[in-house]
Image 1: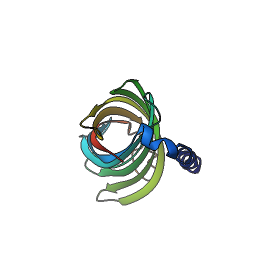
Image 2 (image 1 turned 30 degrees about the vertical axis):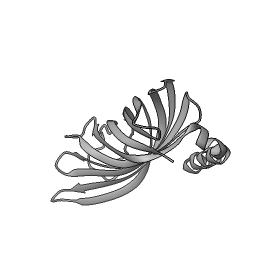
Image 3 (image 1 turned 90 degrees about the vertical axis):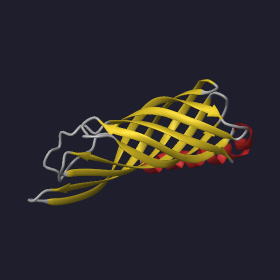
Length: 177
């Protein structure tokens, strides 16, 4: 499934390269806040995004972030989500977002009785909305909120009924390439 998704992204980029200058390719850093439904607290995330607009109404974004969250005093989950998001612009500065993500995730479970570290890959879906404000001819400020459906499979962890779906609020500066 992951190979198919990446092959599709590669083919789209090859066929769309001649139009990049006309529609806009942007790259920039992202910061944000995320909180899983069953996590004790929310945490900050840091990453980068690459955004391509095919037309005034359609675009696509690829992003990678780092996030960490605690589920109780003994479980820490760290992940590096790689997300691909389709963007629909009903207005020039407002967009809806829907996409998929691949989450390389490490679970650290530490107690006096056991010390379990497990790393695995999970697949999730997300949707949301945002705004993209021009800061000049080639720079944009983007901010959005997304809800992510992600079902962690805690194989080695004593409690498996943790709701790991989460929301994320992010902002970034996108520089035109």
